[in-house]
Length: 292
Image (cartoon, rainbow, N blue to C red; front, top):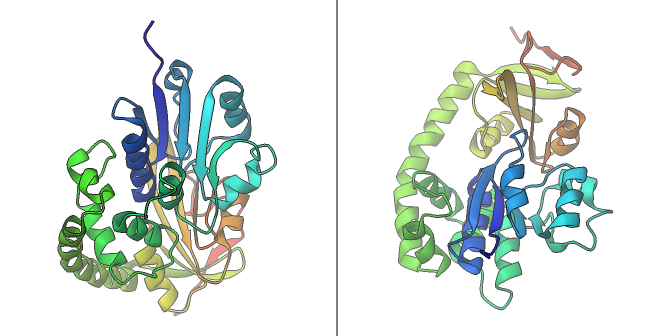
């Protein structure tokens, strides 16, 4: 009888992909990989077909996580405050690693390779994901990595990075430095031309119709706003929705995101809702401010 596979569910960002690449390195290339984002359909067919499920940088609703624990072998590695708050009580005995002070990729490496030094590439991915910015090359490396095909099955990219090949890391840094400078100049122009002030949940906010990222959020905070509110519209499961990313260095935006069904980190969180007449959820306390 053919052995059932191991399934790895991972978040659809650099931290999640790096985490999944580590899982693949540790457990073998035959594992099944499935990228997922909050609100996406749960791949129950793949879950039921698996013997073991590894979830990195992501979580499912409590009832679904408990079902997996009851029927499969689960390893859960995560660092999102909202997920830990929801699952903290029932997950205490679950295998894995949970810690809000580190990125999921760093936790994943330490879980599977506890005696080995964390590779420089993983340090840099994690440094950006939790918005620590303790490493001087974080921005350039992140920009360069974004331009690569960075899915976890790309061994040509991930094998040297996870083997801590310093030259491979430096090549990505060098490529990313030029791209980062150009993108930051573009962000400054977009914020100046398309951002508009608002009060959102009582806070000074700059709103912009653009997919959110940390650099955009940082630029908005530099202008003196408490929250950066970045939004785009897209179709999910046949329904038009507004996807919001919040950024702040003084407000715990994960609490705001949870209010609207989302979550994330204190400094960077998100949520989505059915598209309405404004870019704000209908139940939000929000209005546009005329500074003219």
